[in-house]
Length: 597
Image (tube, rainbow, N blue to C red; front, top):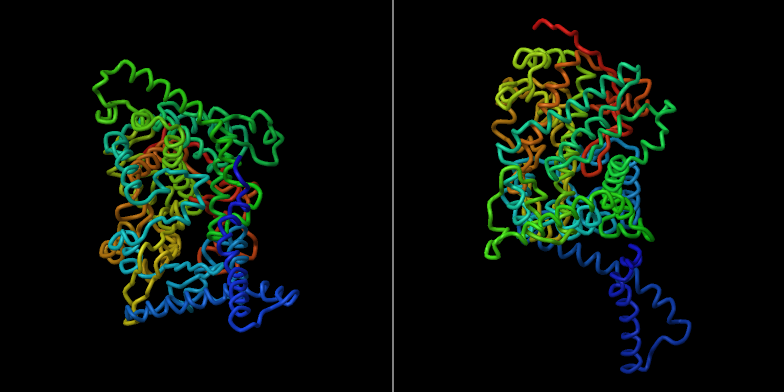
């Protein structure tokens, strides 16, 4: 039986908890032996009690002194400290939790950029977090590429998300990561990600249901619909069989009595999708607490609770694959090693994984990691493309014109068709810029690092074992990197002189798929799936609007703020990936049967 998370944390802290009273006891005995002076009876209690804060304070001050000395030895300085008033920055921790629950993403950090610059240390619960949103080439490029070996996901991140990601590719470093990546790379080749039969089948199903629901007079949660489309597409791509989440039907608005359908809520695919989402939210919440996250889940591992639901759904699929592989091996030549053979035509990632290991836990972890990448990121991109089209009908009109002129109103698009649709790619890229699927990420320094100074300033020293969160979301919106109109949605910035002025000379300012050795293998898969679905959708619908009577709108006071926060019509949030709180509810108008281009 697993111990509660809080008990595990306290057991891990035992050496630190026992050290202060041990020191007091030892000093008391030495004084008694050497000088005949010692604390007696009740007078020992204050000494033992005060030993904890005294030793802890000394260790913190010593660590700070050591870091300053090391920085000076490198001719550098430590990042400026994020201001806080309470010990351990408990006020900052409370603000981070509050922002995670009801705030606008990233605004807590963004507000400090004007006074501290774009790199600073958020020392929460006495743990360093060197947050960086500064010049991409010198800082983010160092983390992701030029000093890649100096930064890893790290043990703290691994510990926080282990209940969710296990030993999968997104929770591994070093040789383990390289093994996972080499194992999955063949399944994201051009030939495989350009095979659109899977996309077409599930897109047709989703759009047919969309039409029926709209004709019945109901708005549709577009985020829910495309999440089902991408889940079914991803599971068929990974497993060779989809989980049929679209077969459960689309959700109804909360005001409709049909939204309380018990059969719908208990549909296995719905239970899986809901649990998977809740597990990601719970895992992301842990990041606010650093290594002390178990204290916020003292008696129950909230992630594991939800993942147990997911495992009940996915384990039978894995069991079937393992049994199939066992029978295959029994019929193979004993001298043939299944690991050594090439990936065969029509073979799925699951088929491939069972040749490497018969451990269902390892296979399950890897599959769920890839599923997050293949399902959640594409669903997020499609959701926010449609959200932007509801706010920019001129972009929708121009995008439809390109689709109809290149493909027509009914023909299935090819890979070459989508490659030729420059405006389509610009719309997707501009959405990825303002609403990147993975808005926040983190690395941990594996060794001392020195980042170049900015504008003639001293270099910045990053101590070893320092978490270095970075935000693509905030960087993509910076006016010094993208120009004075960086907060505006304008796909033309990826087609006109602004591309050559800002992005071409500095490609690291646009990293929605990460960069360097850990760049997303599924990048082209995501572009193809997103483009394909948009073509199929806009061939059949001519307008889209936000259903404000159903949509969960931001608080009214947001309109008085600056930047995009003032004009948002949905509440954007993130766990591992970005999403719209309570969905994006839309109404759409079908195109006329005969449309003249």
